[in-house]
Length: 83
Image (tube, rainbow, N blue to C red):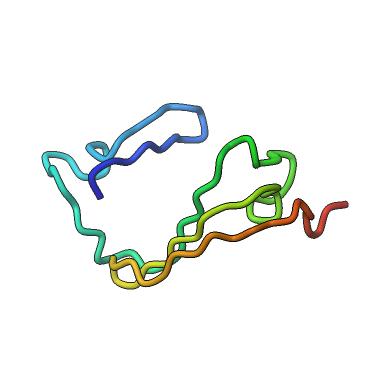
């Protein structure tokens, strides 16, 4: 990880140096999971995150910090579980 842009609930922006002071590059071997990349135009903020993506998005899956799968998900604009 070389760049991070994160926000606390009150809107304060922090970067990678906040979490890892005095480190230039960080190998996130502690991370196993999925990162969803979307364009904020495709996000309906009124509903739960993953069910709120209206357009296509990218899924990046990691195991022990290594990228094991990338996928472009084509969402046809249907939002699940919407009241």
